[in-house]
Length: 381
Image 1 (cartoon, one colour):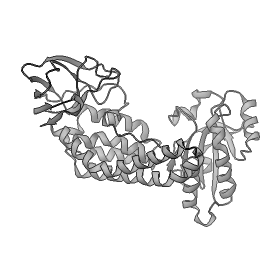
Image 2 (tube, rainbow, N blue to C red):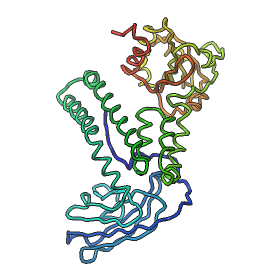
Image 3 (cartoon, rainbow, N blue to C red):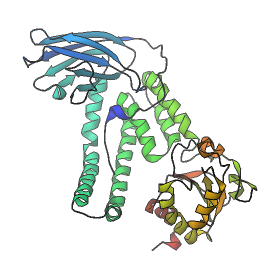
Image 4 (cartoon, rainbow, N blue to C red):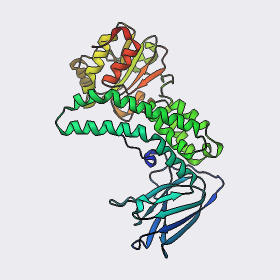
């Protein structure tokens, strides 16, 4: 239940996108109230590539002042540091969003606490942080209490049961706040940066695409927006609200079965494997769900990423998995796994009777809670 709000870590996205937008000028006017700081390093990076080294400039501080000028296509992450590599362990750089216009930086003591003014994108980020503080504080409080109980020997399962619902509700409240912030602040660059986070927390990548479309033209057409759209496109086909992609694989007897053959029921499309420890640990929860709701229009469709049929069949028998199973025994090269973008397991998708995805990655009590919503007359005790 770890929650970290770091705007600059939202984007483990694709590779750089070429952009031919109109460049704008920026000027950074800085003051330094520490005689020890005689040199600074200024680094510009991008929001859409984690591999890019960044453009680094060495800046001399003369009589407590420094100045930096340049051109940018759009707001981007910038860092002031005391060493050339701002990522070096022990370095505490000042990070901010660089924007067009005149920006002032006042370094009164340590660099990390420097005051940045004049960048609209940075100002919008500051305002966002102020407004979201109550939500992140609540999540952090839950995390801290959970960690405290862990240090005094409370079992992880007990801690999970105690904090699962409060953490879920607090996370949903944060995502709802972020969605409303984006809708109210269509000209704020931070709104664009929040959208992948909203999509990841709600699993609704279709909605995320519409959130980008509602932003102002200059933000919607930025290179960062293009990269984010590329990421959303890769996720939309298995987003909540999307029609589940169909496929046909052989069952344990060699007969081909299509996912679409199960339309008319709620289906948990479950990607797993006999060799996957976390999958095997999750299987009892799936068994419980199946036994409880199998006569009420619910079933499970297991897709194995195994390579050996013997191991696959043994795991089905050992774990008492009494539902339909398919596999092409191609490991990570499984046709279905590639279709659904599976890069880790266990993964699952809950489909409604028409084949639309209504849930993703529902495990443990979260799966049972979701099924209880769908079948309230048969609550699991």
